[in-house]
Every structure is written in C-alpha cells, then in structure tokens.
Image 1 (cartoon, each protein chain N blue to C red):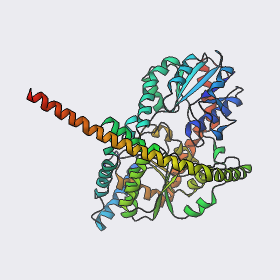
Image 2: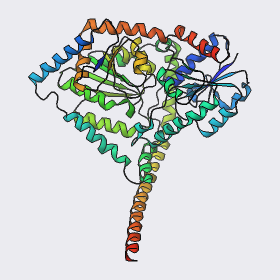
Image 3: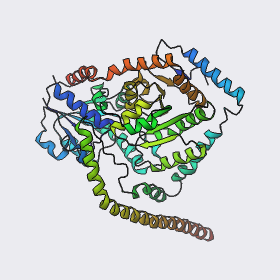
Image 4: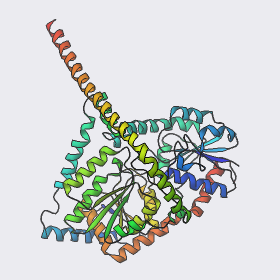
Length: 357
Length: 151
C-alpha cells in the first residue's frame, strides 16, 4: 500500500513539516510505502522530500495522497491535485484568519483569505478531511467535507533528545522565566503577554524574564510595534530570541518556570505539548483548539485580566504542590499524543476510506 | 474579574480556592499601592498599535500595498539557523555547515545587502509616485466637481 504526503514547503521546527515526518515514519512502520512531496525541495530537506514533479512516478488510483493544508495552494498545485487519480485526504492544520494580518503583511492577508476560500473547492476534490483537532474539523464541517476525522499531532519525543545548548542554560538557567513559543504574529497577541509581564514585574514585584521564542520573518512591522511597547513600558527583561536551534529550544524549555499563551487563534498548539513534555506548567487563554489540546490539564483563562493572570503566574511559581499537580496532569495528557496512541487512530481513519493497514 | 474567569478541568484543584487566593493577592497590592490596577499600560499598548500598525490601513489601495512591501525589501537571510537533530554526529555536521555558511556569507551577503539597499530605494521612489498619484487623483476629482458645479 502506498500513502504519500504533500505540502507546498518543508522547514525544520515547523509543526506541519514535523507532522509529515512523524506520519511518514508511522506509515512505514505500518508497512506502507510513504514519501513526502513538496513544491520546491529545500536544501536542508534534501533526501527527505521529493519534488512534486516526481509524483507521476508514484501516482496510482489505489494510492492515498495526504494533502497537508496550512495556507492556500497556488493555482498550478490545485490543478495538479485535481488531476491526480489517487484517493485524496485533506489534512487541515488550520489557517490564521486573515484579519489578524491587517496592517502587518498584505501578502499573508491575501494568502490566508484565499486559503480559506479554497477549502470549499478542496472539499469537492478529496475523499476525506482530517483535522489535527476537533476545532479544525468543525471548520471543515462547514464545507461538507466527506469522511471527517481527527488525526492529532504526533508528539515524537526523539525530536527533543538533543543535548541542550549550554550557552542558553548558562544565560537563563537561574531565576524565573516566563516562556512563550510561537511565531511573532498578531494572532498570538504578544502585546497581551507584555502587559501581563508588566504587571508581574511592576506590581507583583517579581524578578523575572519573558522569553519569546519564534521567528518574525514577514512580521517585521508587528515586531517593531512590540519592541516599541517594550521600550515604552521599560521592560528590559523581555527577550525576543527569534528562531532557535533544537538544542537551544530544549535548553529554553528546561529554563522555563511557566508557559504563558495569550494567543487568540490556534489550530492545535504544538508548544503546549512541548511544555507538557518538559514539565512546564501551562497558563493559556481559552481560544481555538487550546482547550482541546490541553484536555483536563493546564490552566485556562477566559478573560484577559492582566493583573489576575500575572498573579496566577506568580502563584504557580511560588506554590510547589499546585505546580506539581498541574505538571503531573499535563504528563498524563501528553500520552494522548504519543505515537503509540495516534497509530490506532490513523489506522481507523485509513480504514474509513477503504485502506487496510 | 468575573467568577467564570478561570477554568481548571483537573478535579483535584479547587478553582474557587485559586481564585480566592488571586483576589487576596491583588487586594494586598492595591492596599500597599493604590495605582496597581491602572489601565495606563493597556491604553499605551492600544494607542501605539494604532499609531504604528493602524495607519497601515490608511491611504489608497496602492499606498497600503507599497507600505507593506517595505517588509520584503530586505532579502538577506538574517534568521538562518544551522540546526541539528542527530545526537553525536549532529554537532559536528552543524559545525561544518556553520563554517561553510560563514564562508558563503562573506561574499554573498555583500551582494544581498546591496540588493536590499536598491530595493529600498526603488520602493521609496514608488512610494513618492503613489503619493503624487493620490494627490493628483484628488485634484482631478476637485476640478471635476468645480466644473460640474459651474455648468
């Protein structure tokens, strides 16, 4: 049996790319032939991915092609998908609503809008639609997607089995660190993190750092705004770390005291799983798929009362029994996303479209 | 802070107790520092957002597009990170790639910086033209209305 995958791009550290690699490993373990196809093969992914032009050699009506979707497809790609005779499954990772990019990036704004508009057309093209959260599936349901199902993100802990970056451990190992990991993008509402941190420092008097890890490429005007806000609020302990290596990321999680998310749109939230793995207690705003990813673990906030959120963060840092309880529940939750828990779900979803593995 | 503010699904943790403790903590701070719940920082964040990002939505469609192209002028890959995943050979591999990357950067970055500078200059010229174009459109519209009024 052949089950192949496609996504326009592949990048290390990107949730969709990591999911493709994990799925490939899982499918191969299940006895399937599985390759990853991309529009252009990035230099660092050579050997792991193939160009879309090669797909004709693999294509057959009996095969399954997983079309990963996190931003719209270009017209030629959509046409290619239309022509491919394989059974097709749309794997929906969600698209950030376009209004978040207003005033920040017109290209993203247009692409996000076009991507959502394309969903209807894709629904008519595919045999099934899988979302990595029930939240994503609800969006697919609006387009009458056939054979819908949830295929969660696979948490492959081997990805984090790297020696933590010693420089990071040395620099941030001491003291209290509030962490957020994610693209510096307006939907992540990093200004809300800054306002909470402002309260934590100024009024709760806590000596802490705010570590913001994530790329800001394409989001430069938003970054400039955040940096200006940091300056006006006089918060020298806010660190924009940018995109960092796996070793530095591992070290950063080890240094974190609390993971805080004020994001207003998440299709899944991989850093929540990473925080669970590194035993960092999570405080997150209840938005998008966040409550579904956390399940019965972590702490959700329904209103952005900065003073109250800051006090909650302070409480988690100071109260060891509370922290331990939150962390232990998170560890239980993480088991739902381990490869052995996801494998039966993948097999079930494949069975629903007539594929026995 | 409403009573529904917090959600903890873990049955072993009492939400009411946590909320009570938070209220007490805020209360203590308000007693010692009455300015604790000021909204100055929130207003500042909002005003600054409008000042720096809200304006990007003003002007003609062309002006808005041109303003956003500023982000694309710089083509130097400043955020490139040499990463590794393999435990033993990975760091060695990364070191070799870092050396190669540094060597390539020596000559390639100079050209890319030059191109970025050129892109910025072209964009500045386009911005000026877009501004002039918008002003001319307004002028033509005003003349058209004056002409229609005089008829």
